Image 1: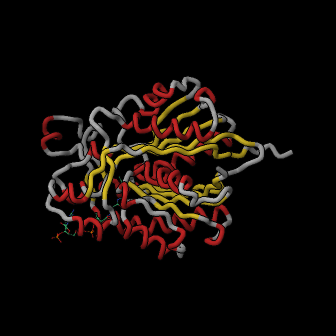
Image 2: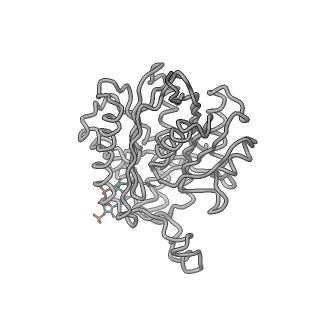
Image 3: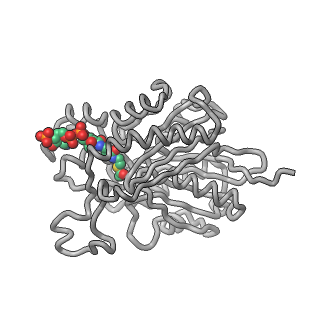
Length: 331
Ligand code: ACO
């Protein structure tokens, strides 16, 4: 008898805030142009969280849709994982705020900090907890409200980011195995390339940290760009190898949506068929941990994934972190 526990994907959902900030709006805020932003990044507009809204509110809206799609009750959920670098507060975890909003009190709840790779780290964590028999039904959310940690006077970064959330429900299964592979990587030698320097123990909040805008996201864009291409291509290949699949088996590639030029370069380097690459960076910009799961949910709803089709997610972000996974979407 084979006792190995498999993981079934039961449902997905996503939510983006209503407020749209276009490149033309940004032209009025910093010295930039729609032409520069479009040609350098592919981004045309992004969504911005409204006043009073929090990351857990975005996560809640996405989770409700995923739970409905999964046809489960909130009481079935025994673990909530929230991947985010823009938590409601440093303490407690955004996963606990989400648990309270969902009234999913049969669950453990904690956050995962892996920047733009956060959702894939969440998939890996859900897989490990389910396969080990510790939890049966896991809600994984990728959520970000980067507009809250953006320096709106810095044209190098403020044109790049957006807010949103996506969620996926996983459940233990005796018959299905929808997570074909997961590959994760990190390199702490590059922590300084992409960070929010203040607000932690290194630089606790002070008048000085606020004056110096050290609570905003800083990025060495060019360096990040180069490593992103190499590591995302490597992640795509490794996740494929672990799953024992090739390009022809993959129906849709969903790369992290940071920059169209990075996506194109990754596809070229990894030998990925560009027609199979899903793109929504023009609508949302870089939503960090939310990007891949929002894209997957939208692709599913647009009918871009056939029942049982294989999807490969690859991402890269602050840490530096990177990773890839191959999922079977039977929804
Ligand atoms: N509008 C107009 N000009 C600009 C803007 C802007 N918004 N931003 C920068 N420039 C200028 C620069 O000042 C520079 O001018 P100079 O030549 O006079 O000095 C010029 O444009 C070129 O700037 P570069 O930085 O060389 O532009 P580049 O082509 O590298 O594009 C970008 C910058 C878009 C940031 C790119 O490097 C990039 O996408 N990097 C990767 C970002 C990423 O993937 N992050 C992922 C993780 S995010 C996370 O984990 C939260």
